[in-house]
Image (cartoon, rainbow, N blue to C red; front, side, top):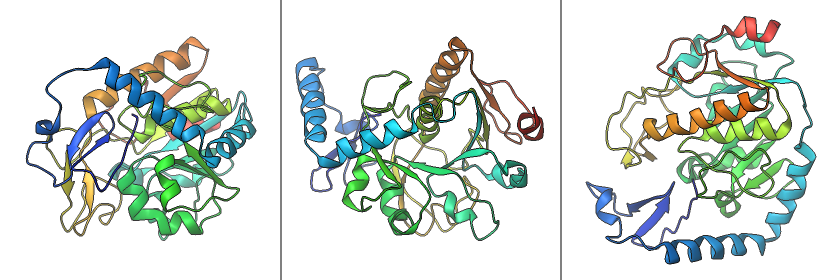
Length: 286
């Protein structure tokens, strides 16, 4: 969802949720007591205007035009970051367009596989992985927050996040985060014209439990992702919102099906039941 990050404020907004800067025990305490649609609408409009005045807004919009329907009728695989990813045979993906997510580069020392592009929206991920993002030649689709740390170049597209709970079939203006970067990758896949999309490594289950969207400090080992160092060593990350993610996934499924397209789940195991299950080798071969 729409992200507004201000490290100098006592409260920042992330994915539509007010979160206390000092990681309060219950971040719901940061929510305003009243609902003010005027204030909300004004903030949204001003935020959009501010981005439109940024030179990178128009550069990224032009670059997104290059990607529009570029792979019409094709197939793609979205590579999520759950532990089950290590069970997937990535050699099957040779010649298939793939979307890597967030810190997929932590997999690079274990395999020769490289994704066709990488999508990252979470400010914590961007801050923790900006060095790689600044070095790689892989096409990047990053939340506009990344303009703070990731230099603009031909392989970088900055995305504007909006609060409207819609599926962007054309991502050139804004996208809706849907509480998971996977949903953004689904929108980008549609934007690029892919007809069939498969998920792998989408466990839809996290070893760490807690209040949805709460910012926490990681321990010494990460058991919720494919690499134990993914979120480890005392870095901040945000607990998932599985329920809201399912709402977004359902929206994506329905939009794809309405246009004669399809998303399948080729994850080895996992708890995501919204999409029909498929075997990765069958998806790639058909």
